[in-house]
Amino acid sequence: MKKPEHYFTEEPTSEEIRHDVKARLRGRSLEFKTATGVFSYEKVDKGTQVLVKNMKVNGIVLDLGCGYGPVGIAAAPEAQFIVLRDINKRACKYAKNNIKLNGIRNAKVSQGNLYDNLGTFETILCNPPTHAGLEAVFKIISDAPKHLTAGGNLQLVARPAKGGKRMESKMRDVFGNVKTLGREAGYAVYMSVKK
View 1 (cartoon, rainbow, N blue to C red):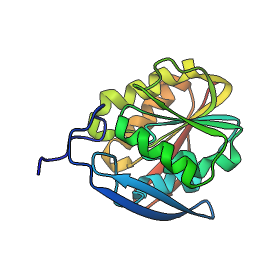
View 2 (cartoon, one colour):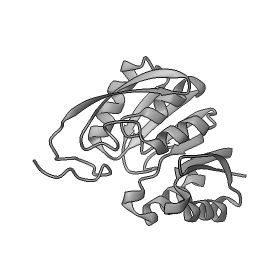
View 3 (tube, rainbow, N blue to C red):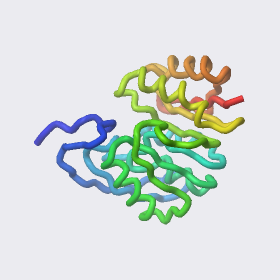
View 4 (cartoon, helix red, strand yellow):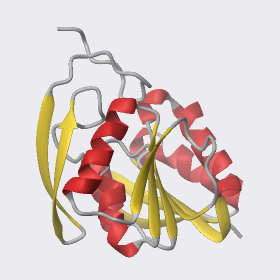
């Protein structure tokens, strides 16, 4: 069997081995269909869990780098509308299925690279693709203000010990502010607000 590519590959060519994941997120029991070639396909990873637990959801929301959809689907009941975006076509296919599976009606999936052809949002949520390198993560941060309404915010989860401090610093540089919404299991959720 071929070694799977990184989950930020646009068209995974690895064998598609399906998996079922159950998780309790924001007080709701959710089910997800996943597969190899998609980030953390065997379980909802700890960083995503920490983001979901601490995120502040408001208005029209973007789940950037949605994978199979746990963040966006968990956020949907509190959002006016949510766009789940990923570059990975396989991830988008599973995110669409999982929206239906969990009875979410105020969400859509958009396949594409980062913010390409997207409008503005009140909230951007992201468990950034740290394996793509810090440059890719910094681009998510530096391009975020163009896709936020006034008073809108960017929320990222990261490990302070593994690049998170640099992300926090970049958020402060770009937005002029950053605060920590929560810390758990070596992860922190950072939020910056567009003034």
